Every structure is written in structure tokens, then in C-alpha cells.
Image 1 (tube, each protein chain N blue to C red):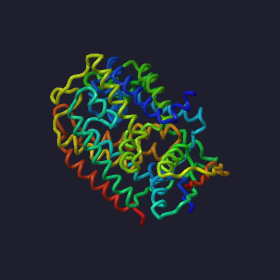
Image 2: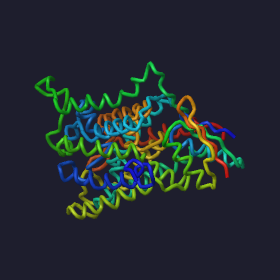
Image 3: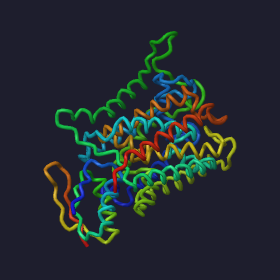
Amino acid sequence: MKFNELMISRMGPVITGIAVGVFAPLLVLLGNPGNMGICVACFERDIAGALGFHRAAIVQYIRPEIIGLILGSFLSALAFKEFKPRAGSAPAVRFFLGVFASIGALIFLGCPWRAYLRLAGGDYNAIFGIAGLFVGILCGIGFISTGYNLGRTYVAPAESRISGLMMPLFAVCLLALLIIAPKFGAEGSGPIFFSEKGPGSMRAPWYAGLTIMLVVGWLAQRSRFCTIGALRDLVLARDGYLFWGIAALLIVAAGMNIALGKFNPGFASQPVAHTNSLWNFLGMVLSGLCFTLAGGCPGRQLIMAGEGDGDAAVFILGMIVGAAVSHNFALASSGAGIGAHAPAGFAFGIVFCLCVGFFSRKKV
Amino acid sequence: MLVDTRGLSCPQPVVEIKNALAKGVDEIEALIDNATSLANVTRFMNKQGFTAKNSFVESDGSTRVVFSK
């Protein structure tokens, strides 16, 4: 069987999950923060900081892993003739779903990918996050099965096919800024900021992060790997196709962590995590609901943006803005606990999602 | 019965098909415009005991496929 046939078979998501399970602990070994070999929310937050959208000095870096995911998907989509510029399904709503997805994820301190990676590293706080994620997805399914729909996307006409290139081009620009790191702001700092201490200063070599995630992006594009779809499809259609991908991720990452001596079971003193179980849970309820209403996890949104999906691109830009908002409005958590205004951010987010869910329904 | 899933994001194509099935039809014709949805819908229909009997590519690149028992 050819490799591509394997990737679009039932084994595809499993192979992608295995790749993430192997590479994420490896990226930690190479320098990324603990249990954060790959985290879409954290890394978009670091990118927002590096671009000066927020000034939390310990979480600023242009993460090459995000660039790799987008470009890996883009190259794969081009190679297999699946690059299709398209957009038009309630982009402004998707932007704010991205904003609140980010706010929720940064209350928990991780996207769904990192939730599983944290658990695989022995961080039991992640259990509350994953439970929250599941509840958020269930709420989303409740809306979907009662007629929720943000409307159709439309294929870009020939004269505006360039619209599908926006996210890959954005990724290339980020890569240039990462390598050049220009400094022409006041006192020799900025406009690009890189942390000198804290999680933002912990980095695998950029070429390693980029190369690894180019491969993961390729695999995820072929296999449709999605950590939200994994649970959603299991409940909604009794379809375990994607679920086995996250099962493989969890098992392989745990095995890798044990082999590398990085498995530290418990609640306290976990890397880039807090022990407030209620807010670990609630943060991911919000995040899971946003991802479900938007049709996929943040990794999947990056992959779809690489395929030319303008709506997914807008969702990602919303997540980057949401990360900046999280830090500027004291919504984001730290190892010490939740941000001062996290409950307010959560409340705004839930009200927004409920409104979107209730008012974007057609009669079934 | 024709179900047009073009432009719908996950999991809407499967949900639309599921809703159509709930009306008790024994044949569904689906218009699907991407490989992911085509795979998802086909997997779902196979599980319901339906098989793709007839499929061809439309001029806009989408696939028209007939599922029946």
C-alpha cells in the first residue's frame, strides 16, 4: 500500500497521533517548555507577544512550530491537488470564536493537543481540562444536532484565488521575522520581542521545530487529524476514525516521556500549569465549545488555513488577538493560578457562544 | 432525495445526511465538494448499511454520489 493510501485510510489519524506523540516530547528535550513540545494556543500566544501585541515579557517568541504546521499543510495540499481557496461562512463570528477559544485555552494553559500532552507527562490537572473539553464539545453537539450552522463557504473565483495564499504567506513572513529578528524600536528593542526568561525563552532550535512540524502538518493534512472531531464524531456519528488518533498520541507521548525520564505524575509543580481544577475545567469548556462551533481544533484550523480556507485563517487571527487580549486584560493563567479577571472573560465568552449557538440555527 | 453539502464545514455534511436518513428514505443523492466530507459521509453511510452505487464529478469539481441499500 502506498504511503498516501495509508494516510487516507483508518491508519492515517493513528500515524499522525504517533508522530505527535513522538515529536512533542522530543521538542521538549530539544528545549521547548515542559509538556509543551507542541501547543497551538500557547505558541500563538507567544507569537502575539513576539509581535508586541501583548507585553508579557516571559511569553514572547515566534514559534516555528506554528509556521511548520501551516506550510506543511500548504505543501501537502498543493501536492495532492487539495489546495482550494475558499471563504464566506460567517468570518466575523469565527474571528470572535477564535478570540474566546484562546481566552479559554489560556485559562487552562493549553490547547486540546497540549491537554493530552500534559496528561501524557503525568500532569493530572489536565484530566479536568480534558473533562471540560468534552463538556464543551457536548454543548456544541447540542447546538449542531438542533440545527446550528454558520452557513456555506464558497470557492474563491479565479480572480481572487490569491485569498487562499494569505495564511501560507503570513507563515513565510513570520519565518523571516523569526530569522532576521529586526530591532529598530526605542532603546534597541522591538518591533520583535523574544523572551529572555520564562517559557518564551525555552525553545528547541528553530530549524528543528520547523522541520518536525512541516512533517506533522503534512501528515495531519492527509489524515484530517482533529482533536475536537475525535470526540465529536464519536458522540455524534459513533465514528471512532479520528478518536484513535488522539488515543495513539496519548499512549505514545506517555511512553516517550517515561523513556526520557520526563514522566512526573501528580498535580503540584507541573510545568506551565496551575492546580485550580474548577478553572482548568471551565477554561476548556469555553475553549471546547468555541472549537466545536467553529468546526475543528486549533491544529485543524491551521491545517485548513494551509489548504486555502479563509474562514479558518480568520479563526486563527482571532486566536492570536484573543491571546493578546488574555494577557492585556489579565485573563490568562500562570503557574501561580488564574488571572485576576479570568471569570469575567469566561462569562463573556460563554454568553457569546450561547448567543451564536442559539441564534445560528435553522429549523430541522 | 438530494442533499447538497457543498461549502458546509465539519460535521455538517454528515449531520445533513443523517437528518435526511431520519426521514426514512432508502436512497440519497449527495453533492459533496471536498475529499474529507466525501470520506466522512461514505463511512457514515456504509455504517448505516448503504453503499455508494453511482458517483461522478460535476463541472464545479464536486462529487455527486448516490447511496442506496
